[in-house]
Length: 346
Ligand SMILES: [Zn+2]
Image (cartoon, rainbow, N blue to C red):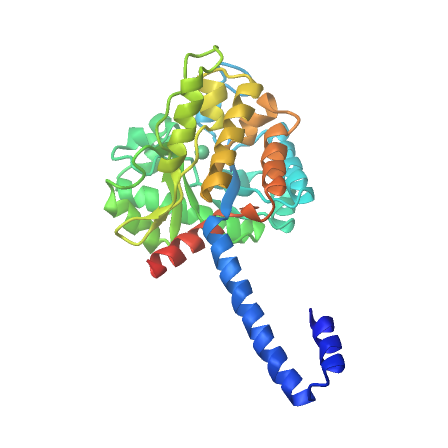
């Protein structure tokens, strides 16, 4: 464009002064136009996140394996290798994975794999130290570890145990791995998020988090071991509307998990991978069409068994790449940022 202007100036014999003034106006016009276009695009731009919760899952790698309930953060070798490989695949495709780390992961002898993930530029958030239920009001409801070994939290207030369990994770991430925690994901999702617990919202703000991912909206999942019927897929797509980010009255931002999660599909409902890929594709397509948010939730301890060839992460990256400027893969902090900006404008 600038070259054309230059040519025009020479041929029309305009003075240099006029040309400069004209080009400044033209440039300003172009910049304003570009900014407007960007703003319009960002209004419609879908923000897609891929999230991996770094913990072990009951019934994996084999059914009836329950001991992981007591040591969620004691990741096995295949899970760690899968987590790192997924990060490399996402990076190669220009994508990103947002990980959430259970603090006990960092007690293992070798944590090079998680340092490598961070080095690739993938954000890692806090998922509590022992995978505790942050809404628990009794020691037994907190976590299996404390049910079996209640003396660990003897005489302590539940709210203090929850606070410390989260704070200790952030300290461990910084001290052992040199990783600054990027946000918080609650162990377990709640269909109403933290709406009924302003005390817990305040606790997160006190801990320094301005966003959390706690809500998992309810949806149909069909009959276990059977192919999902069309109404199940419809229900999952419809649930995406309930999975859009918002701000609690306390000021804390909520970025819900978008159905369907891997454990709901594979562990609870015994889905085949093809059903899962279809549900994920429909949900991502919904987000791209509406310019919404999609926050994919999975667990490498489950995916290493159910999706050994990383088909889901590849599918999401490809769908977003094919959508051009209509969609972008981001970490959850970028979603929080847009949520805050939109509230400021409205
Ligand atoms: Zn979890």
